[in-house]
Length: 52
Length: 130
Image (cartoon, rainbow over all chains, first blue to last red; front, top):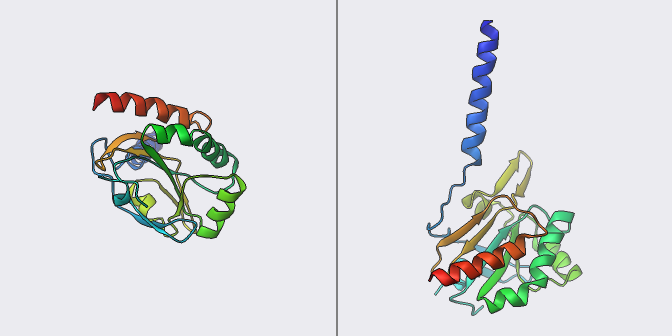
């Protein structure tokens, strides 16, 4: 009986963990994180290229 | 690039030239002009290198930039990184960023064949709210 309770608790923890991990770290209204990455032509593209 | 004051469709995808990613990219390609007319630019990001992106973009005539996030750092900042020990893949997440650089909409569950249209509808709505 005890073992089932332990397994149950383990499953609940596992599911909670999965939920926490699936939660997006960004919300609507947040500043978009900056980035600078190369495109396929080797140009560096910044987020700030798109902002006002 | 002189594209300031634009909405930005920043879309993360797992891998160049695989079925879902191709469908998604080709819809963005087909809707590219219309998205531009709404003041939006499209940028794709994956972990693939520039060479892979170049082949993918040329094969399907993709008119928008594909960026290489080889370290996964940017994907991770956007919560869009799957790290399978030795293999990193970006998740299929899209962020719609407004001209002020704020996140206007987040897409975490994407139907690749309807995604572009979904964004067009949302852009129209969001633009009316301003």
